[in-house]
Image: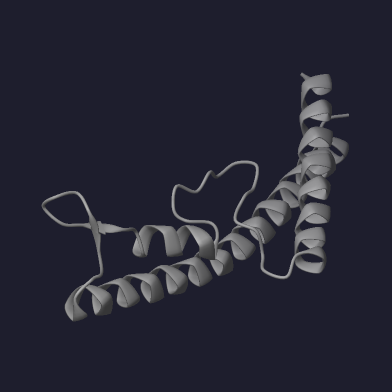
Length: 122
């Protein structure tokens, strides 16, 4: 049991340090905080290009020929694009917060397990 607690504490502590280094790297290296991380896989758009593709797809008439959107459709496309960009911005903020607390949690729990083992399991 003592060995298991020791290994699990070190594993959590090392994972926390790895996540913290990854978090700092993402803050410094990328212009916009990336949405990809180890545990959570986003199913929403991750780039502005994906927002554009979702909003400005080609329209077809009854004969299968591409047509220009009318004023209402164009306004709807712009609103959808702006909503997607705002959602993307919010998702980046949430990913930054989630990554920080994930790293902090692993460091805290791993350090706590090792400290508890040292104090109580002799």
